[in-house]
Length: 520
Image 1 (cartoon, one colour):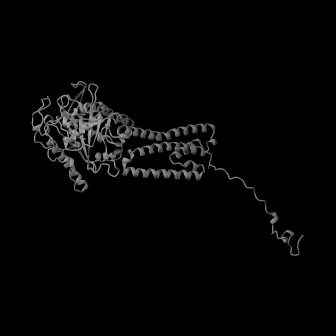
Image 2 (cartoon, helix red, strand yellow):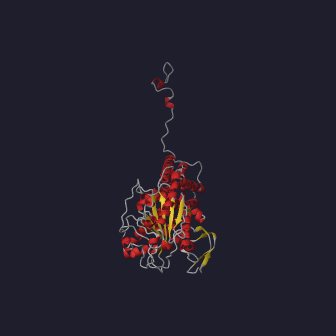
Image 3 (cartoon, helix red, strand yellow):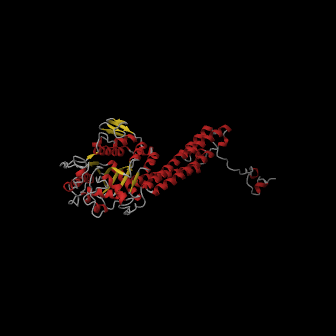
């Protein structure tokens, strides 16, 4: 039916043209799941999962899960930024790595990292839908991903284990509390050296062999270090230096007013430690040896570290041996050197041979031994590079834990580490008080002090050049009168086989660098 104007009934009713002919709307359906451009293969699933272990989020992006992929990438980027910031902080304060808080933090971070990366590999594998693979592909990819999980956790586990080992080793060597009978000033973060320009360490090689009673300090060296530049002077004292004095007020000063004689009457310097332990009480040996040596040199010895000779040999083996220049043939083994000969020339020696090289007395005297021991210390300082230490860390930690004893406080280690790195790159000179400069049986104590002060002044000149500022010698190193020290004329004439009436020669040797002396 149409209207007079030719409109249909529906159009006249206002429904619009063709409204009744529109198709019905389609029903709403759920969004399609993520689809691959093509069906995944076993190799592609394994490859993308492995890539995700290196670049978190890669597998999720490949699977079409963009949100999850970008979140993982963002977290990974944040971790990298934190790592860079931490590296910069450590570069400016390397001693932070020796603190307990840092070591605990690294251990926790390694454990969390291991779990996080394990979860990352598993979720990346699942995101790639390995169920679409044939059964053989599922088995192969599952085995490979399992191996990848174990492999990716390995470095984290190794890091945590190494850090725990380092922490245990450090805490077993460096005391948190002062030794019995001693007091230690608290370590200040802003001034760990208590205003001192130089800090003096007594380095001792101890020999507690089975045929000896107690400890004999057969190697004694004082390292005086400038805390600003790391320039160091090493003073070598012979083990048979006789009749040393003690400062006023020391318990042994009253007992030996004319110089230390000990129980044997010989009064050798290497007897002071054990005599003090036997007669003054356990733990007194280090204090009395520091006191005697410091008074002899005109210095205040701040800290000591004793190294067991046989533990030292284990340490040398742990780093893979030392390359040493042997100036002349050295026989070793027993009293007559019947075990073998270390030939002259450059050699890489293992721990046993390094120990014999430094200690052999066959066709040699104590002063030659001192020189060789000094070169061994120099070679160790030169060749124990960070890469060598890291590559052999477990062995080094095991050897170190049983060979060291020291009174350097645990809290000072944070500041001692950067100082040690300064020393490694700075100028180190050495001076030995041996004949013909000093005769151990009739030592000129004032001359020892003068030579020590001169060596320090020479080192200070280098410091002044480096700092472009005026620096004076350490007050403790400048002799101001005899200070009660005996001269050669007042040395007691106790008859011993080692005492000699030969006077000190007026020689003024300059301290030499280790590179010059040892051919490093």
